[in-house]
Image (cartoon, rainbow, N blue to C red; front, side, top):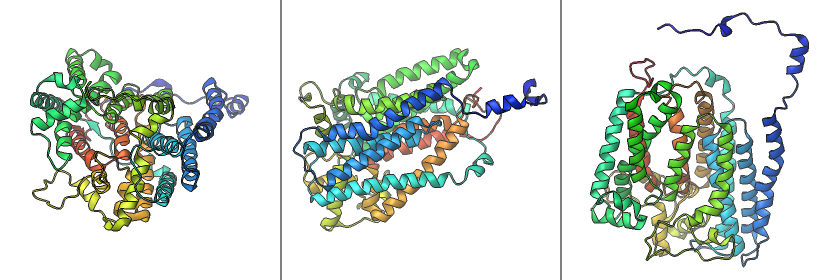
Length: 502
């Protein structure tokens, strides 16, 4: 197949004037550069110094001990790294989402809890366990940065990557669309119709249990069932969205537009924020945003900046549809920090409880918890000793009434492999995130083909990373496996017009 070549790229380059060449060698002072430089100082100071110190001086009953000062250091470090992600010239979706989560869930919110002397989940062990947990979180963050630095040592090989970019197979996309409608329709029918998806999460969970779709001894069964009804619909919708955004020919096709509208209506039912957890809807919103605007660096910076405001101000109040009207209890508070100590952000406290649990005699599991997450689909009738969610395991040991507790990836790695294994795990995570972000920035460009798979999967993974980082991993594994199957179904490495999206 012949390709047309732009004449401007084949003509001989003109010899530049020496004066012009000297002028172009000077530093650039474009309005965007000046704006970035003007915002850099207040942004870094605001996130890493001003906001943590503002939280620190609030009145409260918390102890002023080593745990508090270590938490302050962690918050400042995360604020500096998040500022670097916002100000970078490249869009680093995976690293940006990591540092946004760390700054909010492992930084500012636990700092507010330490100042107020209140936590969403009780810390049952000694104060030294909490200090150790905060220290290990900081060590994991530093290890993540070390992995990112190691990924920079091989820039030359990435330019000569011999692998062909993965693309979306058009006919397999049609098959995925049918699977999405079938899976969502089955879920809607089993739960009693579309109306239940617009009531509350409590009502939806009750419908799942009444339909016999949830296992009594594990939450993984419910995650699988709901995953088949939600994940294929989202991935198919994202593929059609990118197809319409990047292809003028697709925007002229009535069939493609009709399929997109039908999938949009389907997602409005099964993936709406009323009946789904807030972290899952955040995944939907994040992935859709960067699919519609695949090359906007300004949108990337705005998303991370607004993410801080939304997580601190709106997120604690965004559970209006978790319960029905009779069971909903709105937050009554006069302190701007108190919502951060009442719910949601229990990750650091649960990490401390995990340390206490291991030291109480249970010991490290040496990969058993991770094996349970990877082999989540194996029924307990086949594997009687299959481990429970780490959060559930710790909650039952604590005697908690609600065992649906978080287990951040720091705790998941530590309970399996100890501090050395946890540190090595974060080095690997940082390395992998940096490599993927670099490849995404290079391939998800304005001229990338409509079916570029990396332009679809990286925003999806970045959005879902909030769930993975929060944990437990066993609960998150169901949707991960279903998403992997959907992506494998539509993936092709053939570079011809017969299979690709035009």
